[in-house]
Image 1 (cartoon, rainbow over the protein chains, first blue to last red):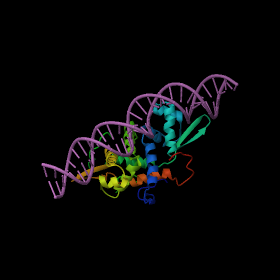
Image 2 (cartoon, chains in turn brown, cyan, red, blue):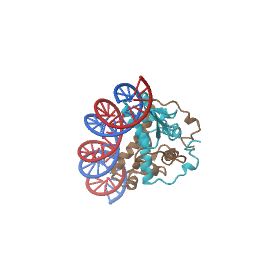
Image 3 (cartoon, helix red, strand yellow):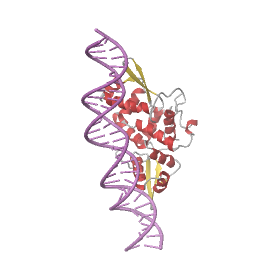
Image 4 (cartoon, rainbow over the protein chains, first blue to last red):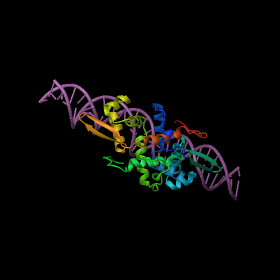
Length: 120
Length: 120
DNA sequence: CCAATACTTGGCTAAATTGCCAAATATGCA
DNA sequence: TGCATATTTGGCAATTTAGCCAAGTATTGG
């Protein structure tokens, strides 16, 4: 069972958002809001990876990769697991696929004109 | 029918992400990644609102509110509709409720320890 | 123990973000 | 027309972000 269920189940009837819940949700969104971090999330959806694998995938400096991963970790999106010389990262929540389908509906609406937007 | 369907339907079996799709998804996430903009999205989920209503809700300068709305608009999340003296904003995509349920599963995992995270 | 590999942290710069104020634009009413 | 209200835009200061390099820590192999 995916952790998010589907939009018609009980999860959706959530408590009203509060300033605090919005602040925390914004923090998660902000952590995801970078192309390189989305790349890592995509990759980790297929299984755990060590930092050097992700470094090669992204083609960035190891320190940059490490900082991106710490952003994801602090947001609760991934966890790390040090085994010997390597640190392996994995996703905490498998729900992100449905999540991205939702974003893509904003990007590529199936129905009606999108209206004008810039720079997306 | 919600625009996003549920995680088990065809929407989820999407084309593999590309650098471009990640860039665009990141842009949507970034637009949502602010507490005030989440407040507006919550409010607009109940129906259209004019800028001055949102201004009062947020307690911010009108110019600040206008800029937040333009961020949401440029990301394709809301549209505006000028009627007389007022500009009304409304959500483009009703899928955001399920979307937030997914974020909340990261924030409040139902199963297992969350591991350490900071500053969320 | 020493060197190599894996990773993180600190520091720097350039760029982006957020909030406000002030000014410009648009609409409606008298 | 002329003023008030609604909204957007420009500009500024403070803060944050993203990338790199350099330096520090940890683990393995010889």
